[in-house]
Amino acid sequence: MRLAALVLFGCTLAGCGGDAPAEPGLFDQARQAGQAVQSLQELGERMEGAAAQPPAEPVDFRRLKAMLPETAAGLPRTAAEGARQGMGEFNVSTAEATYAGDGDARLTVTITDMGGVQTAMMFGAAWSVMSVDRETDTETERTRDIGGFPGHEKYNTASRSGEMQAIVADRFLVAASGQNVTAEQIQSAFKTVDLRALAGMRDEGRPAS
Picture 1 (cartoon, helix red, strand yellow):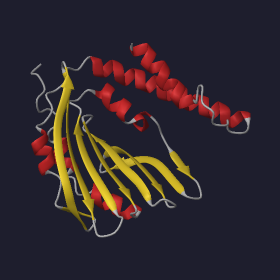
Picture 2: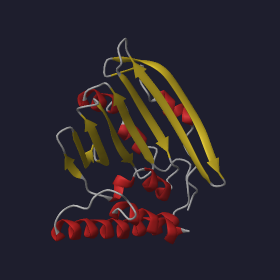
Picture 3: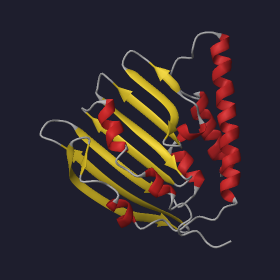
Picture 4: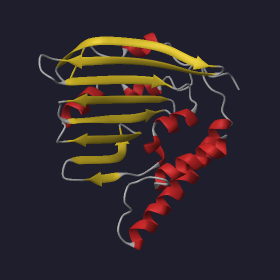
């Protein structure tokens, strides 16, 4: 099962079976293949480490929901919800808030506690095992440090939409996304979540060793 998942993920990175045209030049193709292999190796190593660590009981989603503010980037909160879902030992807590104004602008901020199961975290955020720095006429995408945690940003100027994510303490996935907003508004909405407070919950619910 693990091997199949790794192969599938590796093919996704390398473009196996896809219809997208290959980059011109042997150098570019070799670079893509090398990055895919390196990412696959890193994923395997992290999955092995995750298997040795027992999952934690997720933080009550009501606490996560309380961390979502009433306003974000100047837009009022129009809805908020939370839930806990799982199967067997694997459980997830999620809190989400939506912000909107009189126009078409819309923002969503989400906090997810994966219970410290890094395997699930990585498949939910494939960028966490990659290094990305990409730019076109209308879109930018990059991975970078966000507040001391691994993060990812993507924004399209044509659609005025994008997202910002970070993995906190190898456990929490914080995300802000928006439509008909600026990149700065998405960043502002993301910054409403106290990443350090989440990091302080790193070991909550984890079985005593």
